[in-house]
Length: 292
Picture 1: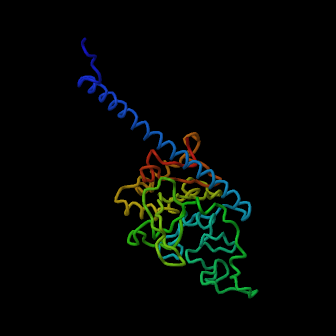
Picture 2 (picture 1 turned 180 degrees about the vertical axis):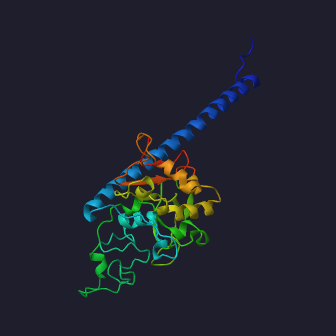
């Protein structure tokens, strides 16, 4: 009696392998798309949380936090919109916002004294051993564990930061690409696990009394930060293009639904910009709190 053949022939095996390779080729791009969509959804959720936090801040302080930046040698040249967003929602030292803040990178008050964050912790009027500044805070308005706050000096080389203060915080987006080894402030030793940091979220507050678009939103509010990231990445960020008085930026934030005048999105509040998956400000994968 003739024995039955078992197993696969070489031809059949090649066919099976070809089908597996074909399915893999179809599946891998699909997984990449799903992963990208999940990140974008997470970024939009982060913006929603920030918007709620900014509403709470405005309810307490009467307005949204400022975002202005000044050219050197102005003392305000070390503190831009992204840094001020982090201070407002988390505090200059991540321990809550101080109502007497002068919005200075140094954490000092408007007179250069300890009346707000008191970095040296010298003010203890009631002599209870706890610096008064800690009892005067509001917030934090964001949960620190999930806020993705990092110091500029940990994100970028000092050589590219220019006038920006390296020892100040920014809130980063969810597209984490750079591993940051955090240092324990008590021991001075690196923590066991590194954290992934994305690009700083750009924050611009609207000047509601502005009569023209470049008076409502000022490109300078975060331009120093964009330039720093551009130099660090060694890649052009379209949002940093200065040609024709930053024409690209103002076209980027212009609301196309308004035809009677050139006018920005959200002229009565603020705009937020994430650099997206490619890490470049001003490209098609950016996530913003305006537009479609």
